[in-house]
Length: 129
Image 1 (cartoon, rainbow, N blue to C red):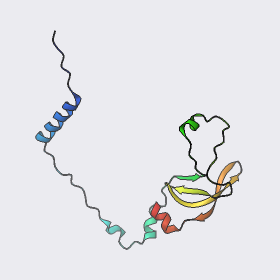
Image 2: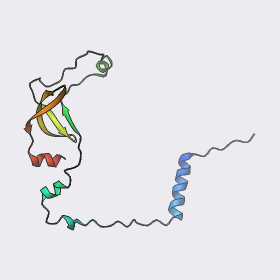
Image 3: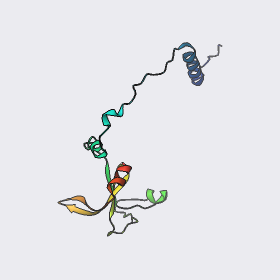
Image 4: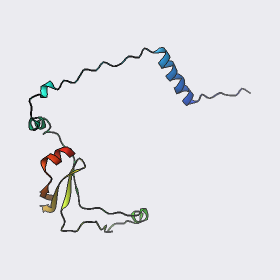
């Protein structure tokens, strides 16, 4: 009875890699140089105008808490999770995971909304984005 020989995939990849490196003509990719001259003489606010139409993710954090896995597995409909913030404290407003402001929760018709009560200064907000 003839023994079937199975190829080891790792050995095959290594052999292919050796074959490519010894038989291939590999050259450095020619990339164009970045020319920032189009931005010379343009102030920061004008540069920012190029980005004004971008959409960013915003989320509001009501508060945080920690729970054991056992507690999470026991969650059921109607369970109330207590958060670390008081109801009277402002909520945190984040843009792309960076805090930019604080606000208070309001109801507009049947939807939640946030009224901004504190803004982080513009320079700090831009650094975070």
